[in-house]
Amino acid sequence: MTRDWNRRTQLVHEGSRRSQYGEMAEAIFLTQGFAYDSAEQAEARFQHAGADEFIYARYGNPTTRMFEERIAAIEGTEDAFATASGMAAVNGALVSMLRAGDHVVSSRALFGSCLYILEEVLVRFGVRVTFVDGTDLDQWRAAVVPGTKAVFFESISNPTLEVIDIKSVSEIAHTAGALAVVDNVFATPIFSRAVDQGADVVVYSTTKHIDGQGRALGGVICGTVPFIRKVVEPYMKHTGGSMSPFTAWIMLNGMVTLDLRCRAMAGSAEKIAGVLAGDSRLSRVIFPGLPSHPQHALTLRQMGSGGTLLAFDIKGGKEAAFRFLNALKIIRISNNLGDARTIATHPATTTHQRLPEDQKARLGITPGLVRLSVGLEDSDDLIADLDRALDVI
Image (spheres, rainbow, N blue to C red):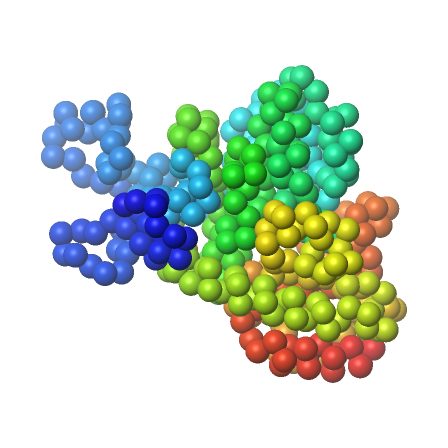
């Protein structure tokens, strides 16, 4: 394969492996283990497995390897390791490289499960964690010190859609000898090449846009060959967080249409945000593609698009937000995102419900906040559905 192809071509063909039968679709190798021609061959493979040699599905699999090579190619990294879920990817990327006494600096605005790993899991095992306002570069400069092992942030925060300056934060990290670990799920591989902007490690929940149809959990860690194979792989294969071959096959099929889907969804999100902006029933509309967004210029420079998600604050708080959600007809209430179907989420009572009220307030997660993941439906139908539901409040 070649990485000189354009992205849409890579999304269809990169990493493909064909058996002796010459199948067109990627084959699913549903096997836990692999047979050897001799005891000597088994010994040799356990000592050093080649690029197309496999030992056990927890270590690697031909279908999973196709997915890893394809995502690494479009992300622009040397290698990747596929995981059982997005949180397995976040946990694996951080825990595999950290030990007691290490120091991590993280943005404060994160998905609830990411906060749990940083606040509970890492701290429990002796890792020191400092939280900063991810949009404030001076706070990053003050917190990242010589000896800091890693910085971690979501390139677009969940759910308030703050956009972090990947290039600047990565430069701050590198000055101190730290690795920049970026959760890039909201930006998608289509709109953000985080590695080109300085990130060392990029993680995705492939459950989101990469699958894109709400079928399977998955995740991936992208980085250099030494990081993936010497740091991540030993941890993941011994702790059991690897992606299944069937899931890898689903993700490979999702990637074929990833570019087309993300661009269509982003176009609809921009149209919807433009219609909602200034609506008297809302106290604010958050969309990185709107000129009113605090990081609008950074968004265009970093992504070239506002992305596929927006958020808005409904006047009247939780009661009004619930009336709105319950009145929707096309848009579904769920906690997923990046789906072909448009999804509305009430973060304060679902994805971020475990946070104390003062922390929610500090992060801007108000009782009236609704996060909208825009799907592939007709944008005019979605706008009409939103308008009808807003009338109910």
